Image 1 (cartoon, rainbow, N blue to C red):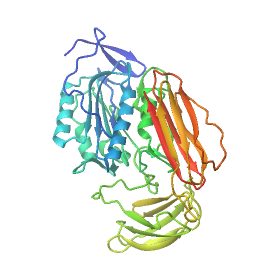
Image 2 (cartoon, rainbow, N blue to C red):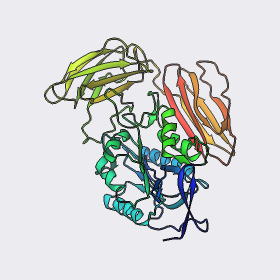
Image 3 (spheres, helix red, strand yellow):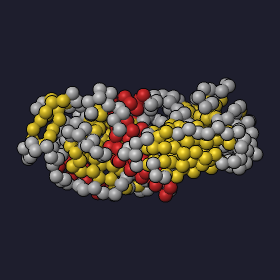
Length: 448
């Protein structure tokens, strides 16, 4: 073992080599980048004292494994890979940590995943931190590793078991129902589990369907926004606190929590219930039918507005012996609207109505183009049918921009430029563009 010196800091015990150099890479080397998300973060117990798990710290040696699971199509796989790259770039920039092993695995075979973790268990020494990040589609206590293989919560618990004393671990699950893993994996002074409850990793309530959990993880940890005590160390507890401050609901789901995902995130074998809405666009009166709920139980059907406030009286449907129910007419008064169906066993699904009170003649989304230039991001938005109604800046990190005024209903392009404030840091722009008919599109650009 290397001759190590240990120094005490406000964040707990920190380890550095006697020459101030990182130990050479051992075990698994860098692999291909990964999908979307769960992180294992850990810190060290030295001489009987347990440090708090950390995410970034220049004095801690990290072993990071990024695992990207299986999406539904090539576009989703690419989006998950982009999420991973953004997170990895921020976590591993500059002197955030001394990296011994950093592996990114895309839909890895189970035997290979086991081998990677076994190698890290052999290489990790007291004082090291292990981070396991899983990104992709998830369900209660399950993560879709590939089209033919699913990791259970028990499987993940086994992956992070067997490390030497003094090696801390943090698991971050960037997937739907990631918080459901917490009770199976457990938590302790040397283990942290971070994942959302029923909510999938999108902005809530439900008008912003982009995977932003990884964005917030990267910004809070990588840029040390979550470093509450300004000691240069982002701990797992500080990261959790930062995510809670951005309205993410973490950990186990409570009975009645709304699933804000837009779809069940189920690969067909995980047993979630499903509802169908006719017509899909949700006019003034729609029919809601369902399957896969608790058999012979009543299913409550609610209509919620964009603030998740119930609209009008609820409806109920009795399920048959197979857990299905026939069509129930439901009034949808306004748009946008969420139709939620749930039973007494906390099984639920929902449908997002992009339009309500009838379908407008314009059903084409506006266009939004973001192009990175030298020190700038050029934006151009337009709607050729009902015309533009709103350009909403959802995020402008490290950017200086002003959206020009325009006439509501204009069909002319609206062009503007965002200037990058510090070209040595990551810049992120996210816009929501809505037309007069209520159609909207979300576009984003990240520049490194």
